[in-house]
Image (tube, rainbow, N blue to C red; front, side, top):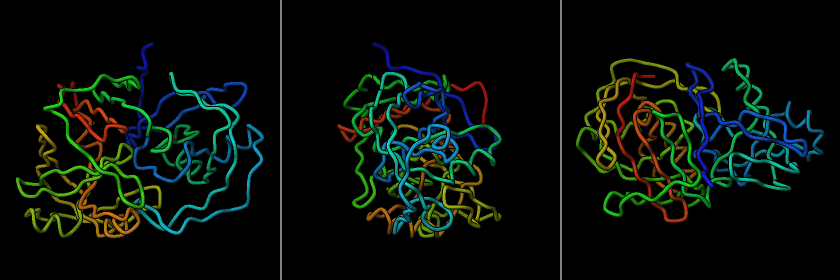
Length: 283
C-alpha cells in the first residue's frame, strides 16, 4: 500500500510542512506539522484548543530543563493520552501527547490552523521521503543507491539528525536537518571559518520565541547538492542547541536549502539521500 500523501505549507511567511491527519476516536481531521527538529519524548504534540475539543484529561504543568528550539527557554507543557491518531498509513492508539500553548500561538502567528506536531518519536521507525517540489511525503519510500547515501548520527542527548556539510567549500561542518526550520543558520564560529561575511541584521523565529541574528550569503553543500543561499542566519543560539543536544551543531539546514530537493530520511538505517529537483519557482 502506498504511503504517499500530499502536504502544503502553513503559510507563505511560515512555510512549515503541514499534512492532514485524524485525531481522536471520531477521527476528526486536523492539520499536522512534520518537524524532525521536535525531539521531546512524545510522538505527538497537541494544541491546547484540540485537547479541549477532544476532552483529554491532562497532567499539571511540566517544564523541561533544556530545549533545542531557536528562541527563548523551554516550552511548558501538560501530558495526556490521545485514544487514536493517524497520518496516511501510520496509525497510533493510546498515544502519549504533550499539550503545548506554543502550538495555539503558532496558529495565531501563521493565520491558518495548526492542530498538532509530529517529530522524532513519531518518525523514528520509518524511512520516508519529502518531495518538496511535488509537495508529497511518502512514508513507504524506497531506498536510494548505497553509493548516494549520506550517513547521519543523532544528538547524544536529543535525537537531532546530524550530517556533514560544507560551507563555501570549507569544512566539513555538522549540520542538523530540520524540516521545521525556515532559514539555514550558522554558528558564528562556522561562519567565520567559512568566510561568511555578515551583511545585515535580522530576527529569527523558532518554537522558543525570537532571537536577533546577523545575515550573510553562503554556498552550502550536502552530498551532491549545492546551493548559493542569500541571507542565512548567523546566531550564537547554536551553542545552546549544541548543549541541549549533547553534540556539536555548527548549523541548521532549513527550507531555503531543502525546497528544491527530494529528501529521504531512513531513521532505522541512519542514512539520508538528497537529490536536487527542478522547481517551478522559489519560496
